[in-house]
Image (cartoon, rainbow, N blue to C red; front, top):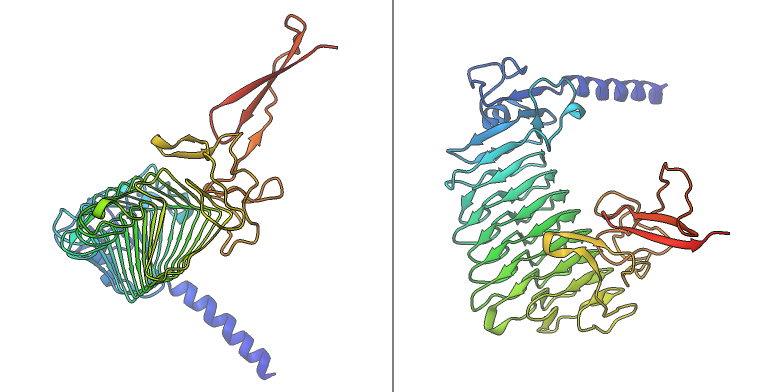
Length: 415
């Protein structure tokens, strides 16, 4: 009887809590004197919505540009969602890619200072400026950051141009983090005493001017970095080590990433792809290629475990290869594998943190063995709705690849 009463109470509590969660609305033409409880009575600022909300509430932000004069302080466990047209009644009706919701820091403040386990979904975050953390500063928090473009932010005296994680464990998924700058460490992302999960992101063209970690910098951290394209990042200056990733006293798990064409300029260049200082990363199923001036540099008792990876110049380890990965168009950010890539079916199915899907959300293992790199090669034999034809005694077969616009014509003699 007591158990039955407890179950009834628990169910009542769940439904009551769900019913009590509120939705707050923000539009560029709203007013902070409004109630914020509908699109027609929306607030004008995200901060007003946060101040009005309670933990568990959602904040829906309509398309447009929100230029800041002060940092948005996220101190509650709320869900903040951009990408609305301003008419939706359900969150899944929004199209965050079509309806750009831009938070512009106006080169005067960090855009988001997150101190709670909040969700940030569907925003362009740009022109934030702070000593540490230009775009987003996570401080002792575990937020979820997804579907965001984080670009052209600046850490003018410190670290973390795009994102600065201070003793935080955020989940960062499906984000583009690019053209951010930091004076010291972590042009794209800085992790200090943090264990973030970074998945399905493009991290590119970020820069550090004095120290290292053009793309990602880890200190006393154990992040899980999976299915990302980390490319064209630069660590400049005399201490500019680790163009793609710099690990200092850290043990990251790095699985199925493309680390390509990153540059380390410090003292002639060390660790264009990855620089390890007293660190023990586990690197599996990764392509590390065309980095300057070397792919991986290990210093001060670093002991990485690197297996089933394609590394330019070669690297001792089980399953490692040294062959051109044959990306489709890496100069323009297309890291799909060509049909004759040596990375197809050459990975380790038992890799740590191996996800069920690839960078694009497609099944991760096709053909029985996982591919090396962020994308799983997919071939497709297309059926073309044309009458069968015999051309000069040849039957033509058109075979398309789903991972690119390329197609191939095969032929055989007619019978």
